[in-house]
Image (cartoon, rainbow, N blue to C red; front, side):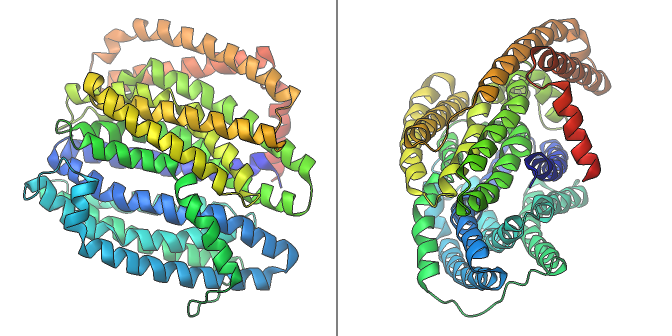
Length: 518
């Protein structure tokens, strides 16, 4: 299977989803600004979303896909789908009970998840109500994760990658319908839309499976040896695969203790750097896990190592310039995207500072997505959890220390530093076990990428000062100025990687030929 083709498929649909997500966030910023209702909705959306990434997409996918790939390779399609059916029944039953209990005890849980929301106050009461509405989204996403994992194991990546587009379309429609309503009403409409979007994604993935002749049998929950193995791998993976999500939740909890708007500043900054992370890191990680699983199951270690090196090469080729740009022009980006309506210049500056801090860790976030499949494909979810817990502890400690000096920006800095800690130890352990060795081609091209990124950085500095008057103008002027910065910086980087050989022209031509023939 062609790695570039698979990454392009996932990355392309992810790009569409993230662009629609930006449109959604621009509308939300215009309607709610960075006020109390915005803070409350973001908490209500982030809590089930964090559990989704932690349990459904994180730990479950990391454990399920390698086991499903093994079944598929050794026992055939029918037995693999039977295992998927048992997994679906058990996981869904567990999450329905878990969600029901969480919703019942939401008033108590909210005191821990958002301790800065005063009990009995408006933010606290709305947070309890809103999160009860959005929490069924977790169970819906568990079903989506399983169906998507099955499709990915058959190298059918498009449907799962496109599913989040439904969420953004539904939320955008809801915002347009409720545009002139009171803020509390807009918050309620958004919460119900999240749950409806979860159900819509289930239907979409079920249709995609049916069209691909992949029928996951439904039945009563059965706890057999395969399901026990699945849960043994899932339990440590709930931390190992989702340490970044835990870090984000920790940031939300700590931000609730700061001034009103802090949660919103971090959320909007997070949304911007999540675009390259999703298009690059998540796309490559999604394509890499089933590929490595099947290569290792067939005993092809050499091909698996080559897949890892090419994934590293492709990810850094795209991530390094993205991280540099987000660090050099964060204020310009935030101003153009979000400074409309209720979102003020002060909010833009606060969000831009958080974006700069988050962006410093972008290469680490992406590399974690590349390195963890090397563990999960070998059915090792324990090692990432040990490293992840240490990184999480570091994140909490740094956040609590840094907020005393730089407020909400300290949370973003702590997230970046803990992610660099995480990826460094994951790399060292893989090297010592002999499971990963960077080849000469990767190292040589990394040097070229760094040189091209430095050249791009210089061009952005010069162009930013030259276009400063346009950024002080109206919306049209700011959009044109940002477009010129992006085009100029991107052009400089492309020329740089061609000159240094980080992305030889022959490789680009070969890639385009493969895409055209595909």
